[in-house]
Amino acid sequence: MSKRTIIPFGPQHPVLPEPIHLDLVIEDEKVIEAIPSIGFIHRGLEKLVEKKDFIDYVFVAERICGICSFIHGMTYCIAMEELLKLEVPSRAQYLRVIWSELSRIHSHLLWLGLTADAFGFENLFMQSWQIREQILDIIEETTGGRVIFGSCKVGGVRRDISAEKLQEILKKLRSYRNQWTEIGGIFLNDTTVKHRLQGVGKLSMEQAKTLGAVGPMLRGSGVAMDIRMTGYSGYNKLGFTPVVETAGDCYSRCKVRIRELDQSLQLIETCVTQMTEGPLEAKVVGFPNGEFFARSEQPRGEAIYYAKANGTKFLQRLRVRTPTFANLPPLLTALAGCQLADVPVIVLTIDPCISCAER
Amino acid sequence: MSFLSMSKMVLRKLFSAPVTERYPFVPKVHPVGARGKVNIEIEKCIFCGICQRRCPTTAIIVTKEPKVWEIDRLRCISCNLCVDVCPKKCLALDTQYSPCCVGPQKDSYHA
Image (cartoon, rainbow over all chains, first blue to last red; front, top):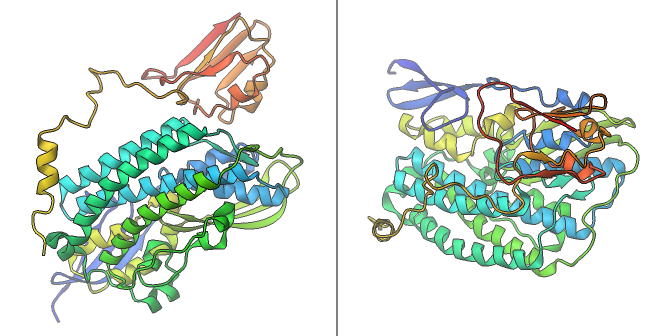
């Protein structure tokens, strides 16, 4: 047996702008074990729920993550609406789906770029982010913010999108689809890219299930599980079926995300055709009371919001389980046995969002 | 097998205009409805203080005597809540952000 060495990975690392620390136990160039440590950017956002009233907390919930901000705010709103026994108007639900899917498209394009950067394909990285920038422009036009949407509120949404604007967005998105299909083809067919992704970081279906993987990590291992199947916020009317790949390696996770881009566009198209005019919000009456678990599908996987209220304007407890946190145990399994040079790529395929995971 | 699959795209980009904006030289134009800094028409304001009470970051301070409306630009998150609740509709969000600053930046408006 050759000598074992420990190589620290992070909290500052060129491929990963966010702080996660992994102690990689290596033998020659092979990783035997990865020991994680997190907790570098804990911000105490869950405790803040005792200081901010339940309506203002939407703004805090949105700031838990900088990429899936809208879906964080929306999941919090779903929990509050359930506790207040509010019925969200159908137009508001469709608008929420449209914004969720726009944020999924921009998050997946961001991920594609970061992955290209992780295996050293700078040009592909820039092409991915160029498309993402245009999606951010659409988001700014419709919500007023590029990253923090601020358009979701307890009981509905704060802004409307006109019918002409929706058609304009669809036209733009269809032209961007051609662009992302082109770069998607490079990710899936280029020999050098395949060399870096195929057969790397394998996670079997059995492992993904037992370790509780979520999102593209789970669907890339052949499990057809997506919280959008539960039909929250009007997804039940859109005929949703999850994207599944079976290989369980980095390549299949990449393929899941590329296919989800098309699926998101399809969902937006369905929303636009089904949408009818109507009110945007239901009036909030009284204070939340009781407990509720809200679940939603973020670009990275399933997020869970647990809220406990006691009939006052401040919640008693809020607990957020983010997808990155759930994906850490599968990541450690995928890392065991890989080559040292593949570590950044494998870490990136869970789409880590450490600010989310530590809140 | 596919090598140099990006060459077509790279060649196309080589002969097209840059997609980035020449930011400091060409000013950034935000779309209508973008959430920038809060502006107030102070002559319409009745100093009711609703915006102060609803502000999630306590960026706004309203005093009735003397009549002063103050905003801490660094605390403001441009959430549009004050604009929504204002009974006289004297608040509005600009599409431009407030300019950069190096220290606390409080703007006061006197009636």
